[in-house]
Length: 287
Image (tube, rainbow, N blue to C red; front, side, top):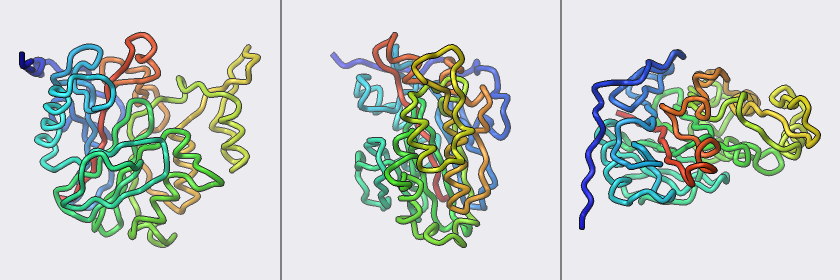
């Protein structure tokens, strides 16, 4: 029997996100608002206004989390319709590989960052606590998207996914080019909720002693665990690369995927109790 899907009523929207600069582009879709040059658009989906059933309600875009394949397909079609561009979904592995997207690029290429200079093709990364970064070249000739958990951000010997992107993306290979980039940091697990082990803090501070302020000890804990500020760590890496025009996630609770259950999927919040959770997508494209 073929299961049919219908979207929930979108006439009643949740409270408007209080942080600036995010606002609704369409039901369930937030504008990734930044100082983008003309001809560049960006957006991020929420968990709202799709067709998936619990625990993936309702706009799950991940095809690897146990959701009904028909629902994921319908949700991905809906995303493309609302973007007005073709989103290309990667198979993300918390690594540092980067791919260029072209007209014939297939779905499911293994990478955690991508870039394109092709209009109508949306660089897209999926998240459910990790940090999405959307980037644009100074002359608006190309765009890029990055999926950054702490492993991908840290990388190996100072070379994480951001450094790998700058090596691969022609618009970001020199420091002079990177000064002109625009970067938006999307919703992710916030510093109020991101508990990590002491080995994570040590790895970051060993690579860069200046990263220490991004880690806060948890009082009364004997295991050395602390809270990590993932957006702050990303900003530090971006600054080291010479990138200064950075907007979006500022560490406040409104941006936290864990704290806003009605708006965002969160693997850390939901997987233990529900068995799994959905994925949102952040996309950037050239008109």
